[in-house]
Length: 312
Image (cartoon, rainbow, N blue to C red):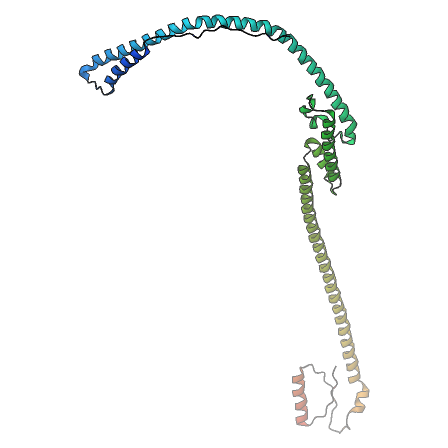
C-alpha cells in the first residue's frame, strides 16, 4: 500500500495587543503597593483597591479565553477531520491485527506442542520430579527462540535434576524417601539435604538417649545381681558359721564329756602319787578364768597339795 502524505497548509497566527504598554503601566501601579501600609482608618479604601485589582485581573483572563477560543477554531476543525481519517484507518488495522493475533496464537500453540513432545522425549524417569510446568519458560514460545536452544536449556535442567536426585538417593539414611518426596515438590536440594541432616541428628540424639537408658538399666541389673550374690554369700557364710559353731560346740561338748569321763575314771588313780593313810583323793571341776585358775594353783602349792590339771 502506497503511503499517503498528510499535507497541511498552516499559517502561523499572530495575536497582537498592547502587551508592553499594559505591562509597564501595571508594573508602575503595582510598585505603589509594595510598601503600602493600611490602617483601620483606610480599611474601606483597601477593600476597594483589592476589588479593583481583581476586576482588572478578571478582565485580562476573560480576554485570554476569548482569544483562545477564536484561535482554536481552525485547530478544532482540523482535529475533527484528522480523527475521522484515523477512524477510517482503524477498521482495517483491527481486522488485520486480529488475523495476526490468531496466527501468532496458532504459532505459539504449535511451538508449545513441539516443546511438550521434546520434553516427553527427554524426561525419562524424572517425570515425577520434573514436570514440564516446573521448568517451562515462556520465552521458549518466542519465534526468535529456536527449538535447538529450547532443547539445550531443557537438557541442562534435566541433567542437573538427575544429578541431584542421584545425590539424595546415595545418602545412607532412613530419611531419604521423605527427602526425595520433598525435593519433588520444590526441587530444593539444599532443603532436602538439610532435612536428612536434621533427621540424622535427631536420630543420633535418640540413639544416644536410648544407649544411656540401656546402660543405666544394665548398671542397675548388674548392681542388683552383685547385691544378690553378696546377699547369698553373706547367707552362705552365716550358715557355714552356724554349722561350724554347732560342730565346734558339739566337739567342745564331746571333749568336755570325754575329759570328764577320763578325769573321773579309775585309770586316773594310777597317775596319782602314793597314798598315805591320812590322804584323801578328791576331784573338782573348776570353771574359772586363767587368772583365777592361776590363783587356785598358787593356793594349792602354798599349802603343799598335790594336784594335776587337765584342761577341758
